[in-house]
Length: 302
Image (cartoon, rainbow, N blue to C red; front, side):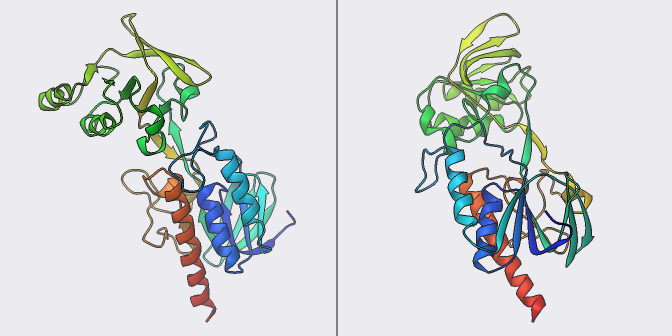
């Protein structure tokens, strides 16, 4: 990058939400640069599903085609790197990268995603997105009728177990310690044929990310093929908060129906601002952010 290049929009994050926003703005003839660190949250996932026309393709295949199509628009550029600092305000932002280079933009879109906080169970992180999974709509069909576990505790365990039970009857709830839900929930879970294991998990055996065995604290083992879990998370980038963007109680960037944050000139799209963690949701949010941001620029120009 040369010093002080000027763009209409800088998009921080070049995965599905960022690329969708970039295409929308490129088609609106806006000068855009997408800055991407190259660390998408689904990089371990072998296949992406529930995406019409691309069902079963690898995330890398889908992203490569998306980049090719987005960059066909002459006013859109893409740069590798991480944004470390943002100065200024609506209409005049300065974006500084880890290489010390800077660009200026009228508007920002954060498509930076979230960072999952893995449970401290050896083997879990290596299986995440492969056989340790979070979404039955993304992965459930492939693990239909398989020996499956749910790693969860608390009030939401019953709801999650009921949902996963639709895909497989061979289901066990692992609370990883004493159950914290009430007796009514315990009885309901058992009534639908789901065993409850309260013994803590100490490690997972797997082969290239595909689960084989759970090891419990009492020395016993359980064979397993898939393990559902909804991990805690943090924002992948602290920059939105540093700029004053408000988070909602769940920890997502607060946005309105146009994907606007609480700070003028800043939009957010994708996993960082919504609980629906699917490619289609990220793409839709990116498209909305790009279109509504373009309308905002038009309103300011006339």
